[in-house]
Image (cartoon, rainbow, N blue to C red; front, side):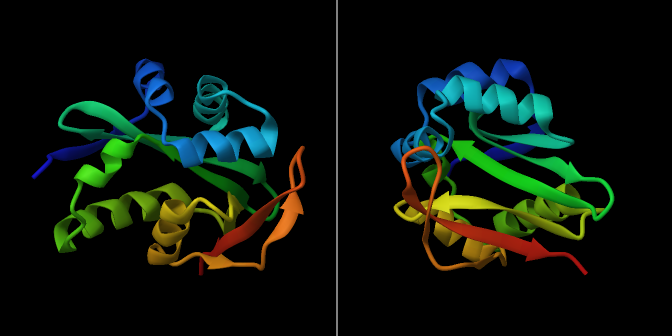
Length: 156
């Protein structure tokens, strides 16, 4: 079974994740912003208030963070991009507990966090549902009018 760690994200993590990004993530960032994997990861890391990388067997595999959108009502945009190696982690009770603590740390201090996910990004949708996000119906969005679903988590 693969060993994984969640660490503070660094610029040095970007080249491997960008070069090996999941096809669904590449398609999603292209349809939403016409960005390359490297551009999307750099923007995410540079703009995020908090940002983490998941290392699988010491290799950068997944980067996720939250970008503060509005200080007054404490809303943020959450994002996550990764490689297929994330599937090496078998999520049991221990792994879920570790990831859940990182998600709680990520959203601490926010009232609402949200974003959009392409309807074909099934792995991301399953993960977001698992983590407790709620979804809207698909609607056209982005530069190409592709169907995306808005997702959000209200923190109480």
